[in-house]
Image 1 (cartoon, rainbow, N blue to C red):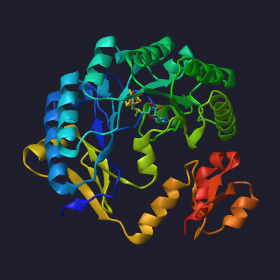
Image 2 (cartoon, protein in one colour):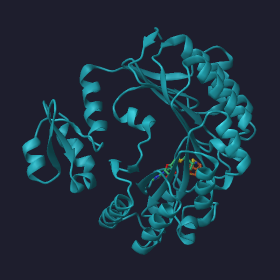
Image 3 (spheres, rainbow, N blue to C red):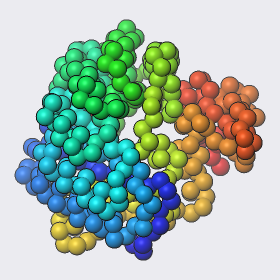
Image 4 (spheres, rainbow, N blue to C red):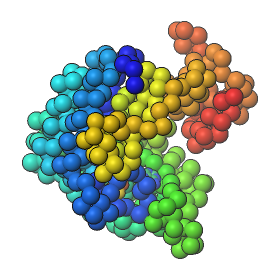
Amino acid sequence: MAPGVCAEPFGVYVHVPFCATRCGYCDFNTYTAGELGGATGPDAWARAARTEVALAASTVVAGPLQTVFVGGGTPTLLDPALLAGVLGDVRDAFGAATEVTVEANPETVTPALLDALLAMGVTRLSLGMQSAVPHVLAALDRVHTPGRAVEAARLARAHGFGEVSLDLIYGGPGESDEDWRRSVETALGAGPTHVSAYALIVEDGTALGRQVSRGEVAAPDDDVLAGRYELADALLTAAGLPWYEVSNWGSPCRHNLAYWRSHDWWGIGPGAHSHVAGTRWLNVRHPATYAARLADGVSPAQGRELLTAAQREDERVLLGIRLAEGLPAAGLPGLDELVGDGLLERRPDRHGERVVLTPRGRLLADAVVRALLP
Ligand SMILES: C[S@@+](CC[C@H](N)C(=O)[O-])C[C@H]1O[C@@H](n2cnc3c(N)ncnc32)[C@H](O)[C@@H]1O
Ligand code: SF4
């Protein structure tokens, strides 16, 4: 790839593809030790990731690095020294980021882990809580108790993490409206600065997908999901965490905000996506293939695509309309109808006018996107 100059702000995503066990609903690119069969473990992953950081540094002329996001998988399964090595190389290559997020599974959080994360410059912890109700957690195959996520969030705040986020899932098998209310209220009781609430997606190829197709578990109902979204929005807003993206409330994650604003980022790790200077690509998915490529001096990227102006414009609309800041109205098709249907509202702006999803529009965001794209 020819050297690229990134638009500012520039972000780095680091993908850690390991989990202790696999949750039945999850189709992320992650592997248990049993699935890898000793093929490529954390040490080889870290060596390869550090080689890819060097590749990124030699390829991209980036502005100051703004954000780093370490996601997974379960980044906190790693020996912290491995993560510190990768993050140290990112800092040496691109400068210190102002926001460094690490995703953590609640059962992995200990005072020693939090100390290690703070020492390597992590500023934001994102905990996968999912639910506060034991039978819902069990149906989602989560291995932590309901109290563990709350305890981990409080511990992180007490340790000095200025930003702590909790991920919740609604519409899990057997979940009632009251269960969902309890999950949101319990999450708020932990004092997070940010909450993500996702409707359960039944992914093909997962254990949950197979249970649903065999008729053993009912797929989440759209009306039920809409009611749970509205309840979450009301509770989170009342608690001082306003929405800033359709599924996110509170003090924004600046890394994801940059992604929704179509800024540039380099994704390090197996299966990671990148978007740099108008080109996007996807790394090979399997950790063994990823490590082998980098060990041989070969780029792990595949499916490289130079985006056309039309594709870039579609992405700007597709991603930007999800944000509470909305999009400039100029040039967007079909606005009168979308405003008339109560899906979008017009807001004056110092440069003209913007359009923003209404509460009903947020429930039907995918339909709004389809109407806005040519
Ligand atoms: C892939 S996980 C990685 C972080 C960490 N391993 C965990 O489980 O919290 C990131 C988040 O994606 C969300 N997620 C994953 N699969 C999902 C699905 N099928 N439907 C809805 N949300 C999902 C969960 O809320 C989870 O916290
Ligand atoms: S949801 Fe998180 S812990 Fe569960 S399999 Fe996916 S990445 Fe791993």
